[in-house]
Length: 115
Image (cartoon, rainbow, N blue to C red):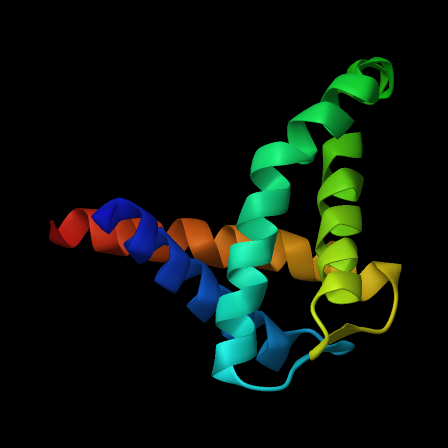
């Protein structure tokens, strides 16, 4: 349970950082960032594997690059689910998802190193 909470906090911080860097992505409050991190985690857990499986031929053909577009789409989908999380278009979602992944990985490595 502790790992889940730490990952949730890390992802919430990553969402907040992304909103300051990528134009076209806005979050109303830190509470909204926490909700976004939770919804994104749920979608990535349950929906992403199904979409990856369906798009497997395209992923193989593009050598996995299409996965970046799937991540951007799912990031955009979260903005349609969470009321106060706004993404103005696909490209901000695409670049926001890339940056979110990088920041989340970096923060996770820092936290892991401290333990």
